[in-house]
Amino acid sequence: MVQTDENPFDGTDEIFEAKQPLKKDSFDPETIFHRDEEISLYVNALQDVVVGHDPNNVFVYGPTGVGKTAATKWVRDKLLEKAEEQKVDLKILGPVNCRNYKSSYRLVSRLVNEFRDPDDELPKSGYSTDTVFEFLYEEIEGAGGNVLIILDEIDNIPPDARNDFLYDLPRAEASENAAIDEACIGLIGISNDLKFVDSLEPKVKSTLGEREIKFGPYDANELRDILGYYADISFHGGVLTDDVIPLAAAFTAQERGDVRQGLKILEKAGEYARMDGSSTVTEEHTRRATETIETDEILDSFDNDLTRQQALTYIATTLAIIEPEHDARTKRIYTLYSSIADAIDSDPRSERKLYEYLDQLSMQGFVRSEDHNQGRRGGRRFVYQVTDDPADIVNAVVKSDYQEALPNNVWTILEHYKQDEATSFEAPNPDDEAQQQIWKFT
Ligand SMILES: Nc1ncnc2c1ncn2[C@@H]1O[C@H](COP(=O)(O)OP(=O)(O)OP(=O)(O)O)[C@@H](O)[C@H]1O
Image (cartoon, rainbow, N blue to C red):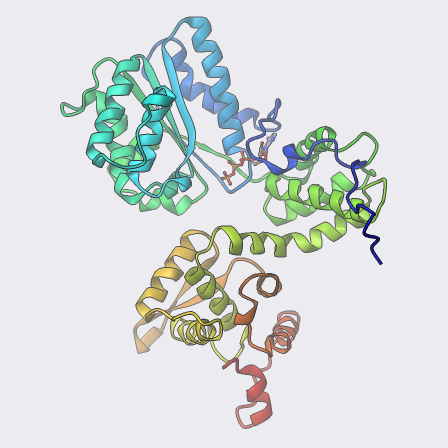
């Protein structure tokens, strides 16, 4: 029983020295590990700026959490330092994360405001988009010299801003319409969506891709060094047992070589240790952290990345995949989507809308579609897959606000699905009513 005069909070923390480096991307490491080659390509692309020549446009791409933004910030700071030393006019805007700006007005005014004093900033609305673009050109021209604009997650750029940013802006000084004579603009675009580049018009592609720098995933040895650095500043000395970093690094490398995931594992392992009242973080804590990390990440997406309709579509797709009687085709996904929308008292949208949600999920990397050609019968059909393990998704749904969306027999079906993954799948007998019932969700 809890005594009312006892306070359950503990004013000390024997495990963590500082949590912020593990949690926040805004923490800038002093050292960038294992990116010498990429940084040297960066330096090469931007060297011209230091001696007063026009900047190149740079496109940086690679999967999530592999240091694209961290390396970019590091290069930015070194470049500013050198420009100052050389007395070269240089202004760098960003990195600005396009994901945070739903309209081109918001994105452009954010950039304009980087030039302005706080009391002169643009309001959240009130001008036409063309006008705010003109303000931006004026500010850039007023600054003179070189202006570099760094756009992160450039694949999320508001669609109505694509051409202006990716084509018109980098060419503004050559254009008769834009009021740019003195200044030179360089654009640095960062993306983890490789399909994004393919989706661009050729003229835009060649402008943005003047210099391309690819960041690949880290291997286990590289991750050991990076995670070790963060562990040193985040945990008290001597708290981590020897196995923790190698285990977290090996797990992360096996997954997708993403530092952010490794940092989450360390944080979680530390929390388990704290919960256990242990003065050290052990292999067992770390192992436990790796076991729950996938589910936690998906849960995080339910909370932060997916709209309600996207979440329902994602759940319906997962159910269609684990249900062996059907392929996860759009028709089946729509049936399941409608019935789970009913189950959680949400109005199902039209089938056409569902296609949109599936497209959005695919753009965000949650699902992918495989195009199955129907052979002589003609026609094509799309079969959907989820990128995460369906079992992890179901486990995350249970912990989310959407738990009511799951049918009662989901665990039985999931169990069968897992067994089928391990062995070969035996289709349910169509004459056996009981078997058919098990496989059916609705
Ligand atoms: N080589 C490295 N050295 C030190 N820290 C790193 C390194 N690579 C990544 N990090 C750290 O890992 C976290 C994620 O890295 P970062 O944000 O740069 O990834 P990203 O490739 O830009 O991912 P996304 O595409 O999701 O934005 C940050 O906290 C970053 O500081």
